[in-house]
Image 1 (cartoon, rainbow, N blue to C red):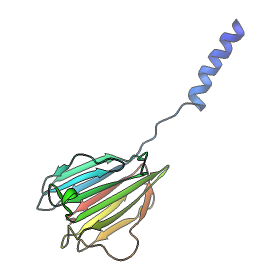
Image 2 (image 1 turned 30 degrees about the horizontal axis):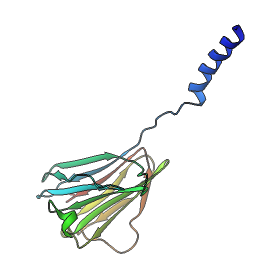
Image 3 (image 1 turned 90 degrees about the vertical axis):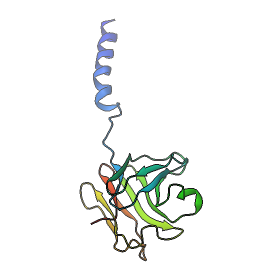
Image 4 (image 1 turned 135 degrees about the horizontal axis):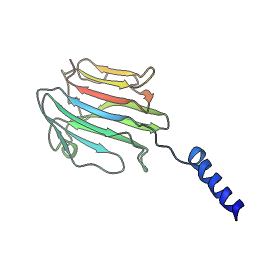
Length: 162
């Protein structure tokens, strides 16, 4: 009986040290709207979120990085119209994929240039060297826009950046 109690106590002491899942910090995907006009955002993975309106000049949206169980990644789709996702309006897309200690992200556009004439930037705010993306005129340049950052840091999309 004493040996059983001793083993139970020893196991209880060891399991938290080695077997417990310890949560780690995960960063966020954030969108800042500094434009003089409102925008609408949808978070899209295996499902589509309700539309989120970001107010002109100071609207903000943020979501913790998640690994979508079906698609593997998420896309933050942004239009300058409230129903743009469903009407074929130009979309700006910040896509990310959480991969353990890293988050891969890129910026793209479809159906036109929603932010033509407005500077758009994406910056990784993590430890180490995170890749930045800049569209000085709000239009997609040639070449790959895919970057990587530590998953504990944030990735920030700035619309109509200074």
